[in-house]
Length: 422
Image (cartoon, rainbow, N blue to C red; front, side, top):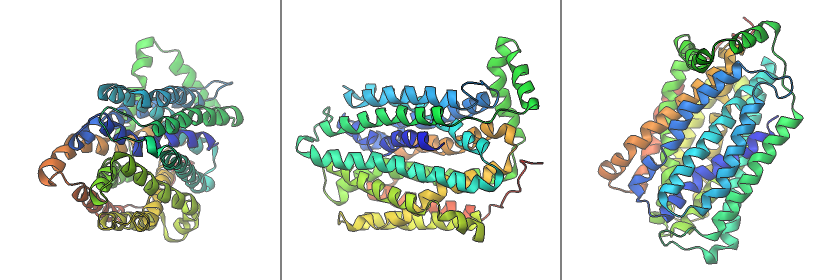
């Protein structure tokens, strides 16, 4: 059931590492990178909770509940990936990013609920850590393609403004193929569990309402869910505020960092950034399932918090290593942290919310991801320019401090008691 998540995460992997170099190729100044990435937070904030609420009230005997949404999202994302490296000017690439993010968010949110729907409670931890493994696999393939194609076609790479090198085309085309093919595999191979008679009657009642009531239904569901949200989710929102702000800073400024610390041009710096992501996602794949017995033994809270501290240590180390091989070592800690971030919180939340509202709550959890990203896009450009001296080294260190704060807040999380069977 997680095969489709691989293609979706390949696309997100390209966003993490390849989109900002394209913006730089097309002439974007470094302090503009945060605001140019605002598409992700805005579309995530709007699209995911709405799609989550809509999928909760959807059922088709042929297509299921969640699958129609992530299939349509994958088609949109695939088209955008094919078009992205052909961007002639900056505004065109920025516009494509908005459409790509709509597709990716439409595909990803129902996938989180899809796994929760299919698995019994005792398998939720394993299911979400398996999803974490596929997060690593998808991004691993994306980063591997960037490194491989940059090495093969590196001689054609140029750093002139307005020119996107050939190797970018191949990575994005591969992503377009994987985005649709892997999701189709899951759609065709994995049946969804039919809703209970009670759930089906609620779904049919929602369908029989007047058109405008159906339009507003997702928004009403979101508002009600927020008002009734478990305290645990409010606590995790504080962790996410600092965690995801820091991650967005890292993804935006790791390429400029290598341009400064190693004297690389954009192409070589982007390749080095991809090697960093390649390394930490290999680690994520290796340790994702190993975290399951650790969380059972020590509790998700402790494993999660210490993984965030390890991520901070990695970010504190990277700016002071100017060797292209040694700088990969901190990515071991980063990969452990990424595996925990992509699995443990979802397991906790899935146990804390009612099963028939899992879609909308997974959407709200994503709001807690994209709101910090949105804050970052609006604020960090000014912080970078005026407080951090326009220095990418300071930006990465700043992100490390935020991970420490996130870890301290994670220690305050209490393991939620399941409400699924209540």
